Length: 73
Image (tube, rainbow, N blue to C red; front, side):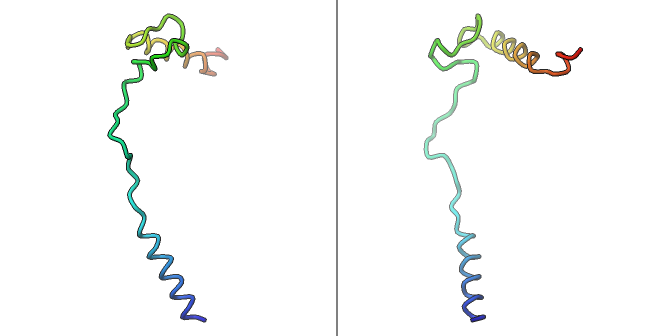
């Protein structure tokens, strides 16, 4: 009984070491976030795809709306 337990434990420990590395199968690279999705329905306000300054301003405005300290004071 003890021998079966030791063999089972050894097999389980060795099986845990055999995990393959998890890497992306495609060589795809993501575009920069301010480039947009190409779908006009996902844009907010007067932002145009590719306009980095307007994208950063939109993010600042949106985060200030979520800032509880600004809401209270």
